[in-house]
Structures are given as C-alpha cells and as structure tokens.
Length: 166
Length: 161
Image 1 (tube, rainbow over the protein chains, first blue to last red):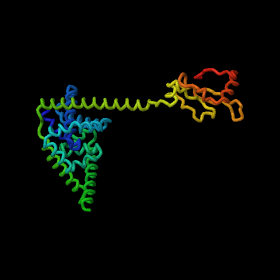
Image 2: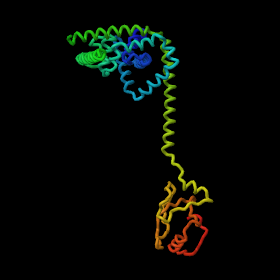
Image 3: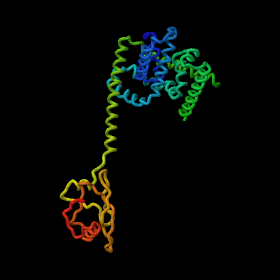
Image 4: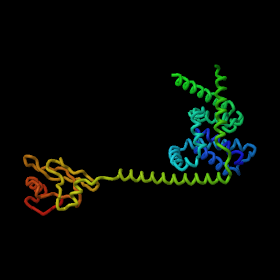
C-alpha cells in the first residue's frame, strides 16, 4: 500500500504545503500513520486512494488550525538547519527554488477550499466525482470552487502582467 | 480572449508545472527507511517540544517573579538597622509619610498646630521595624503627646511606638 500510494500522497502534500518539502514529508508521514491506525476500521478497500486523500486533507486542515503552527514552523526551520540542509540534498533545494517560479506558488494564496480543490484536480488529476467524494461536498461545489480559484489566479496573472509592463 | 480559453491556459500550465515539480520528488522510499525517517522526525519533534515547554515555563516563572517582586522600601531598610531609627509619622501631617507595606498598620500620632493646640495626624506603624527618634522629636510635639496620653513630662526610653 505504501509503495502504491505514498508518492501520490507526498506529491499532494507538497502542493498543499506550498512547496515546502519538509512540511510535505511530515504531512505525508502523518497521513500514513493515521491510515495505519484506522486501517482496521476502514472497509472500502477499493477506495484506499480517496480515503488517504481525505486523511491528508484533514491532517492539513488540522495543522493549519493548530495554534502551534507558528512554533512548528520555527522549530521546523531550526531543525532543518544546518544538518538537514545537507540531508535534504540538492534535489530538494532545487525543488524549493523551482517552486517559486511556478503558478502553484500563487495557488497558496487562495482560500483553503479552493486551494485543495485545485490541488486534487490539477496536481492529482482526479475527476470531479472523486474530488467531491474526498471533500465530502456536491460536484457543483467542486466546480464552483475550481471556477473561483481559476478566476483568482487569472486576476493574479493579469496584475503581474501590469506590474511587469511598468 | 474569453474567460474559458484563458482558464484553459491556466489549467494547462498548472498541470504541466505539477508534473514537472512532481518528478523532482522522486519515488517512494522503502518501508524500513520510511519508518526510520518517521521515528527520527518524531524524536526531533519531541525534543523540540520539550525544549519549547521548558523555555515557556522559564519565561512564565520569570514573569511571575517580576510581577510579584516588591522592592524593599527605605523605611524597611532603615528599620532593620536598629541603631538608626526612622521617625514614623511627622508633625506636618505626613509629607514624608513612609509608603505602607503589607505589614504596616495605620496609626494616629499626636502632634500640634502652629498655635500649640493638640492635633492628631495619621502615620504608619511597622511592628518592630520603625521607631521614633526622641532626639529629633520636637519638644512641643512631645508635650502634645503627653497631654493626649496623660503622661505629660514623663520621658521614657521608648525607642519604638
């Protein structure tokens, strides 16, 4: 199960964590840990992927809500430096630098529901039905969130174009 | 350009960038190394949590100490030195009235007006720590006190009230 789902979960975690590889690894591992704890209660073995995404999003929401987020970030930063910067390797550092040039860095500014929907749709390439199942909302809501998210991104891009033109 | 077409451009860009970034993440580590990594992170998290809690506790204690600390007033300082008793309550009605502390008791002290009439003024009595210096006690005040207490003319060696 890990070999099958971990890369996807980790990738989704990366997009949810705004390209922070450290946070993404943490989030993905917490998701797997929660899944392992709840595995005996899980019955729909054919929908493991959706179930894991649901856990991932819940974990992500929980982390964002947590009052200790600020401290965790500080501690994460402290923990990463200097030893981890060596352990992270050049690939991870390059990934962080590359992230800033992508449109996904603008997605991080969107409200959480829109952001999650965009990640599931365009990073994970899930169908509307799957996204609705994971988020626990109607398909119409999924489409609406996508529309608003894309419109916000479009507006951002237009503003950037105006700035660059000046 | 219509909105839908522009959305399509953004959608394509998001998908392409997601694929590009996703390939940089690499594959799945082995279960054993994943478990070891998770254990390492959990240990580090615990360590940092303990350090943070310790720091917060130290800050709290420091804050409490600062909040509860009261500097020793000059009266108390002098009161400890029995060889230099400090007057408590003064004839001018307390212009140099010592600051009351937790153990100070308000008292009435006999004094006199300018025309020699007896007068009672307020003062602070700090048990066993402050006294009245008889040498500095003006004779008029001493007389007024005597008249009030009925001990006129009796000079005692009272160092404290």
